[in-house]
Image (cartoon, rainbow, N blue to C red):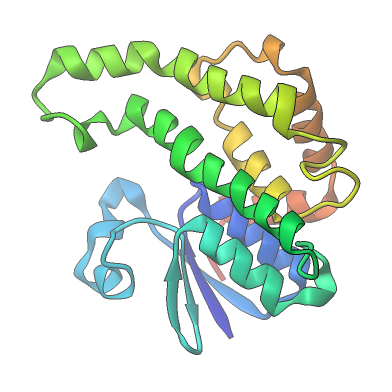
Amino acid sequence: MLTLYYAPGTCALAAHLALAHSGADYTLVRLDFSRDEQRSPAYLQVNPKGRVPALATDRGVLTETPALLHYIAQSFPQARLAPLDDAFAMAQVHEFNSYLCATVHVAHAHGRRGYRWVDADDAHSLAAMKKKLPQAVGDAFALIEEQLLRGPWVLGEQLTVCDYYLFTISKWLEGDAVDVSRLPRVLEHRARMLAEPLVQRVLEAERGPAT
């Protein structure tokens, strides 16, 4: 049995979608960020980083979305969520997911969690980061739009864990005040994902209490 620790509206959605797609036997533990449950002593025993997602397995806890997505894809190969038998294509999966994690998500975080990089009372620097947010995230997504989204799905014709991760991050675009008119292919990808019954089920599960 796997246990996914998550909070609604976070990048944990990508792993949740991959678990649902894979047919894995898993349970959910929902954290309430408004009550700082991610920093509670109990959760810090699970994930000392104090963030989500975290995935408890029979061999220990995994953190960081790219790692969780790789683990799920490799643990449930019948779901065909990654090209496990193609070293180059698999590297492209990691390349794309690493870009989302290390560049796109970090750019997004500068607008809401600037205190990670400057003093919390440095109002000028915090304001400057928020002002830069639409351009920083928009430019990152422009690269995805123009060069990295290769077909109906990220890698072309086959849906992979990359698509669940891209969908998750793309849901934040409007909140980051990005000019989405520049991103028709990204928006079409998001719409296609939203049309999937599995995606709707997972989104509904995240709106309600964890089971």
